[in-house]
Length: 298
Image (cartoon, rainbow, N blue to C red):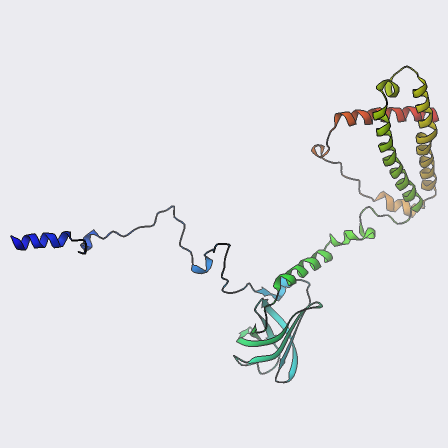
């Protein structure tokens, strides 16, 4: 009986090992994310460890010119870039005997356009064959290379070579027309005159009562205002109109042929035009007064 009690106590002891039949294997839940490799784990502020920097092939650099100069054994050789990263490059070896693994290059110079990105020692880390081409991979020993600057240079050169870069030149813009200088000057002056007049008339309209501006009854102030508009503002518009008309009649047929191909400006979207009711009313009243003054001038 003592032996049975000892056996029972041993089986219930905290140090005793549970029977294998009671082992439970934890199965992952379907809602849990899949297991990730250690290299893909994020640190507190992103990936803190990069096991291998991104590499860019020669074709990834676009229009950027690349010069790779290798000095080895007292000889200087220019090679074609194969790929590049911030801590090393691979280049095509054009000689008969490729450098051995572990060999140190006396000097490696890498230029992107006129920018010297690296000049210093390098160590051969790989020699492989890509088709009939021998590719030598080296690691940079003196410093890292700023690849971001090279990629930005690539983007700028691609933009300059594209259609958007031409718009920085006036002669390449769709609205540019050769000749018609008098028309251009007159229209430009008329636009500036109208912009200044809009500001001045808005200030005047804000300072006068409504019956002076749009009332039917006559008054000394209203008569003086109409006379000033007729002799000043409206007369200037008529003068510019006659000036533009004269310049238009003097234009050559070739100049008008160039002007006819100008693209029509696209109308703005309705939602892009802020509607201010007081200002809209002022603009409508000003337009009616200008048309009335124009009839008086005629």
